[in-house]
Structures are given as structure tokens and as C-alpha cells.
Amino acid sequence: MRTLLFALLSFATLLVAPLYVAAKPVQPEIGKGWQEVVVHVADPVPWVAFFTEDAGWKVESRGRVDPMILKSWNLAPEVTGSEVLLVNEGDAKGWIRLVTLKGIASEPIRPAAQAWDPGGWFSLMTRSRDATKVYDRAIARGWTAYNSPQEFSFGGVKLRNVVIRGPDGVNVSIYERLVPKLEGWETTKGISRVFNVMTMVKDFEAERAFFQEGLGFGAWFIGNYEDAQPVATNFGLPVNLSTQIPRRSGILWESQSEDGRVELMRFVGLEGVDHAPRASFKNRGIVSLRLPVANLDAWVSNVKSKNIQVNQAEGPARLAPYGRVKLAWVQSPNGGIVEAFEVLP
Image (cartoon, rainbow, N blue to C red; front, side):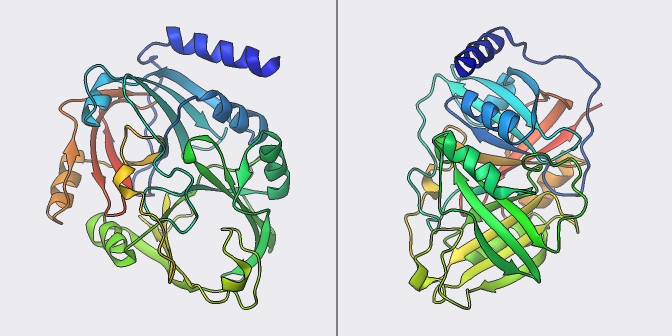
């Protein structure tokens, strides 16, 4: 009964939601990676329920997507959109913007995908002090996972991780630090803000070059990971292959920060189904990362000089809670979209 009432109230709110509600504009931190993740969903209700009830987040705002943004996404004039902005209270970034589109046919970017299938964004990466508890609650909702929570060591840290699979082909990766215990991150209740987004890639070097040479990201880690003994893995890799299939990884950042990261991964020796052709704003899943910049025109000029195609909005748009913004976006060889935006006075 509570779920039905929540759904009806959410739907009613979206019907009367304004395009933009004036408030004190938020100026995102520039130079520390992406600010928020845009996730296209068929229905925001199950996602809002999970993040508010299980993850401990809150709904920051609801409204309509500015038609100028939809136009910049190369969508037809008859397409409309509504959005829900989810934030982990107390965190100024690592947000999730749920977008639902009407007037256009859509399908999941990564339908029924295996972990090693390349194409599009794979998962939202978060932290928790009890990954198993969050996993249990997700399973109780009827969601699934690539495996039950698994323990492993990386970079001298012992971790527990689970990748849960929600609606729309969207995965949420939850890391619990076992040894040493996680310090800081006081705002974390169920799960933390999103600090990293993973993509499974077909061509590791092409994707690395796009972010490093093209967008100017640096690298915190580039290398291979293999299990020393046959074990079950957080990605559902067959146990007997865990010691034979290297996971080629690159953890990239705009500057030396725990937040706003991008992680590339390739399962060397496994050739999956390539989902990159479906990676677009019209299809459902993790669609884009929004990267704040100080001067959009300068950013566009620099990216174009790297022989990267740039799609730019014709004029300013309204984007809560920032106010008026200028927008442009690029797409990686693997289908990952990055939207750059400048907050205007």
C-alpha cells in the first residue's frame, strides 16, 4: 500500500512540476571530475524508493527537462522529459539525475548484458559500511546481482564488493572497506555518493586515449588484476577462469581526487557482445556524466583540437539547482557520453 501511494504521489508531482524552480544557484566544484550522472529510466519510482529507503539519500528536486537540453541531445521536438535529482544529503557532488522521456521509443543500452560485454557505462560505484545489508535489501526488492558480496584485496586494501542489478540495465557497485576501515565519508548512511563510474571496453587504449589525451584526465592506476587462487568474483566470472582472465583496468581522474573518477575495464581474453551502438540519450541506462567547466567555449575548442566531435546546445538551458547553463557533449569510442556544462551568471 505504501509503495502504491508513493508511486501515485510521485506521478502527481511530475504532472504539475515546473520547468525550473528558482532557488539559490549551486556552483559545482570545477577541476575535480564529473558532478552528476544522468540515468535514463522507464519509471523513476523504484529507483527513488531504493535510494531514499535503502541508500539513505533524498530527492533534491523534481521537474521537467528543459527542451533546450532535449534538443541538444538530438531528440525530436515532440519528445518531452521529466527528471528527479537524487543526492546523498551533505554531499555537494556524486549526484544521480533520473530522466524519463516520453514520445520516443527506447530500449536498454545494456540489455541482459554480461559483465565483460563492452559498450556504454557499466556501473555507478559507491561505498558502504555494510554492503551485505544493502545487497539483502536490493534482493528483497526483486533486484539481482552478478554475485553475492565477495571479498578481495586491491592496492593493499581488503574490500567486500557486490554489483547489484536494478531496472533499465543499471548496475550499482557497492564497496565496503574491511581493512583498514573506511575513514571519513561521514555522510554515508546506506551507501555513499557516487564517486566513480565504470565502463567495460572493447578497445582499452582507444578509451584511455579519449579520456587522457582528449579530455585531459590523469591516471591513478593502469594495470592488470588477476586472482591468485580460483575464486568466485564480484563480476560473476567463472571460478576456474578467475586466475586466467586478467582484468585490464584504468582508474582515471581529472585531478587527484577520490570523486569524479572514470574506471575502464577489459576482461582480456573474453569477447562479449558490444552494446556501444545502443549508447545514446534516447535509450535507457547510465547515459552520461556531467562535467562542470569554467569556460565552455574554451573547453569545446580544446576538445575539438583533439579531433573529437562535439555536440553543442544552441543556447543556454535551465538546469536545477545550477540555474542557467551552457552545454556541450562528446562520446567516447566505447559509447560513454560526457556532458560539459558552464554555469552562467
